[in-house]
Amino acid sequence: MKHKRLELPNLPYAYDALEPVISKKIMELHHTRHHLAYVTGMNAAMDRLEKARAGEGLDIDYKATMRDLSFFTNGHKLHSIFWQNMRKTKKDNAPSGALLEKIEEQFGSFEKFQAEFAGAAKTVEGSGWAALVADGEDLHVIQIQNQNLMTIVETKVLLLLDVWEHAYYLDYQNDRGKYVDAFWSIINWDDVAARLV
Image 1 (spheres, rainbow, N blue to C red):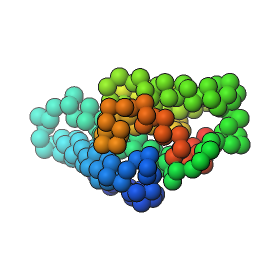
Image 2 (image 1 turned 90 degrees about the vertical axis):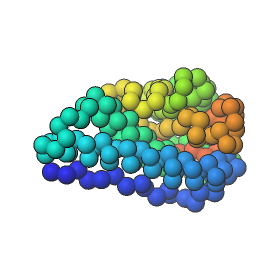
Image 3 (image 1 turned 135 degrees about the vertical axis):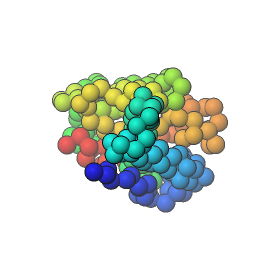
């Protein structure tokens, strides 16, 4: 049986919608080149596996293929959430309602959560992500290095920040911290809250 092939999802906004925090140029490259590469890579890994299952090309390198399947599929899934986690710049952008109450309960205050999330984003080694995840009733901020070390098992991803250099370098060069600090004004807290339910 053939698996359904991934397709590059459309963004929920125009490429220039997140300016000045993220430029149109970065959004176009990030979406049409980098995210598309994850979709293409995942489909290629599935093609190799399906040929092996059908008795064709049994000499495939399973270790490399499984690594590709994990890396590219996680890249696609992480980016798909990341796009939804953002919206047009808003002044005084902050969560409210049940999400804010949960953050305050778990981290002590929204400001303490911001400090922890920003700290994770600014210090993840190499290429990676900062994430807010729900583990049952608990919330955790975690780092995701590359994409094969995905997350704590059985957690639900609520909020992601891509800190691979392709996400910010054209706008911020090597100042990852400035990019992380600017991210707060484009978070779509309604999307984050909906993922908590």
